[in-house]
Amino acid sequence: MSQPESAVADSRAGDRAAGPSPTGKESLAALAERHGLRRAIARPSLPVYLRQLWDRRHFVFTYATSRNVSKYSDSALGQLWQVLTPLLNAGVYYLMFGLILGQKKDITNYTAFLITGVFVYSYTQRSITGGAKSISGNLSLIRALHFPRAALPLAYTIQEFQQLAISMGVLFVIVLVTGEPLTWMWLLIPFALLLQTIFNVGMSLLLARVGAFVRDMNQLLPFILRTWLYTSGVFYSIPAKMKDNPEWARFLLEFNPPSVFIDLMRHLLLRTYPEDLAKHQFSHSSLGQLWLYAGFWAAVALIGGFWYFWRAEERYGRG
Amino acid sequence: MAVAELTKEPSQMAHPQDEAALPAVAAAAPAEPAPGTPTVVVDDLHIVYRVYGAASASEKGNAANALLRILRRQGRPQMKEVHAVKGVSFVARHGDAIGIIGRNGSGKSTLLRAIAGLLPPHKGSVYTNGQPSLLGVNAALMKELTGERNVVLGCYAMGMTPSEVKEKYDEIVEFSGIGEFVQFPMSTYSSGMGARLRFAIASAKSHNVLLIDEALATGDRDFKRKSQERIQQMRGEAGTVFLVAHNLDVIEETCNRVIWLHKGKIKMDGDPATVLAAYNS
Image (cartoon, rainbow over all chains, first blue to last red):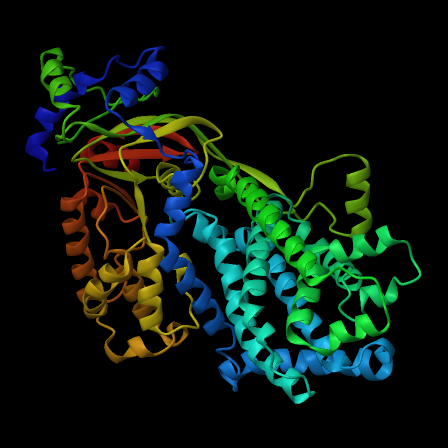
């Protein structure tokens, strides 16, 4: 590295296959090949990619936690907002739909019914919103460090999951306070959340790629998500609403992924909800069917989203 | 071990080509990287990246105009494509420390990012031995978080394992010299302290091919000296080092070869004394 050595090194310059000649381009590729060099940017195969992602799991979790910690760091109440935000959300929706609009008639425990819907839906909604920004909002990170890019949408979903874990605590308290009993069904709640999380990861990956290349997506997404909110039976019971409509229309609404996860959670969490459905003899998907739909959506979203995201892996840095 | 490599630039500093040396190097090549083995081959590289929100003042930014543009099928004016690197070729070898100089906007940082495999080539390719790494974790850190958390976050972002993080943690904090400030959010740091911590984190990992962007040796004089030493040490560990800097003294001290970029093309490539003399004149 010091000057005297340069003579030796200069003599080695003869190593290159050709001097500055018209064939220089080909000889460079050949030179690279001869020395076993690989392209700096190449999409790894899917199994390799998954392993790289697994190797970065600590980064994913630390990044998610860090974002959650920094989120409320400049407010006086700090981390307390993680509990206050879902509580206030629940309060606002109860005021709007429970008291002012009065949707209560078919549902015995409307408060718990509504808040379950709001919390479950907002988990998916926030994962999707976060995912859509996870690439486009982190270009400087992508242009600075090496890691499988799927780590970012994944971290955003995990961040939302951590948030949800707190919301669920709030939800359990509300549900118990409103007079629902603690049942064995509650033991199945983690599985429902797992399926929803898998679904959210898939959607977040899907939207991450869309949001990375179609910038207008971030403007459009709130409207799409709000429409989805209104069609997902957050504020009303789909079986009750669709009692006079054909069977296929009811099925279509119930098969809609957020509806599936919301209804699944209501069946597990609230004893009064299935009782209400039975009492009014609304036709509705059974709990077994809901599990099936949930599994279906989780699998489709994860496989589709992951594959779609991975296909553009090497291009995310370009912006 | 200055090596002037072939580029297709006619302005090459010609170096004597000793054909006799060819067999020896070729024989040594496939085994372990000996000095002189190519580690990075850049082949006619073009980089184009997109910039958003770059509407010029002459283009009126109101909604009616935006609609008209869409109807006329004109491109979005807010999105500009920047052709930052235009056909760069060179070969870097094991043991090289290559300085990249050039004016602002000449494509230096973009070239580094392309070598690191972070920006996809528009045309041409970059071949590397292992994974070149850019020195710098700024983008992964969060200023609202304490120094402690940022050290851990930065280490994970660079791909360390928990045991490595544990092992390096004290060393990083000690090297940064920020003392008990490590428990405060980074937003409360002075710019010098922030830079020191960032450098301490970034330099905690050793790399095979190391890419260093400028403005590293920041902070007071003491820290400048410390960080220079650290860079030297990392250079020793790394096979090949690329250094982008505006401070030509640093380049002259550290590098055995200099590439001068001008408007995305190589203007000159050769030993530091010659290139720097030409650059300064």
